[in-house]
Image (cartoon, rainbow, N blue to C red; front, side):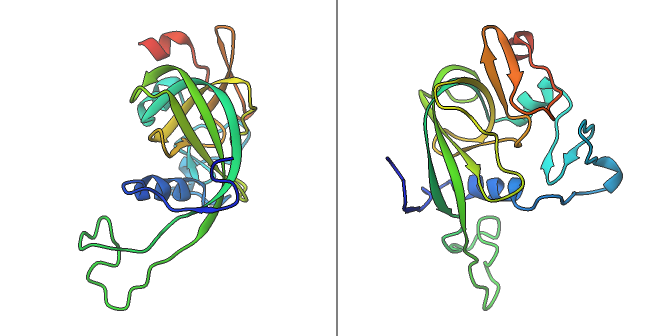
Length: 198
């Protein structure tokens, strides 16, 4: 199957998406900002849960997503993604080593599970036929786990070639008739059709 057992090099323009993916899921159990603004309970309320953003409503999920789709999972495979191929260019936004003497590129390979999703409906973002959803593996923030053959509503960042869930608990809802069922018991946010069409 495509990508199986090899190290993929990201396409130009995807370094930012991979950096975001690594940042969102890098360390389990860490909090950002004021510790009082984050909770580590079963029912979080606030801006941060562990090391990823937590959303209080469907409207917040939609606003944070660059792509909101419904789709059928056609397949999945494991791969290793090289997170940084080396700094280049003079722009400090794109290259943190720009102008810094003896600055070496960091590299690292992150194991990912890639889901191929056939899009049946686009609620927000670019209209795509197929989206590749990259989820990290080997961290406590893995997930969400999707089942091949099932239909899901997904809240994603990135684009069709390298999309990733907003967070492991709130980014996926199984489609059951006209109802969206969270795939994680920790997710208490209800998504209704009105929020998607609003």
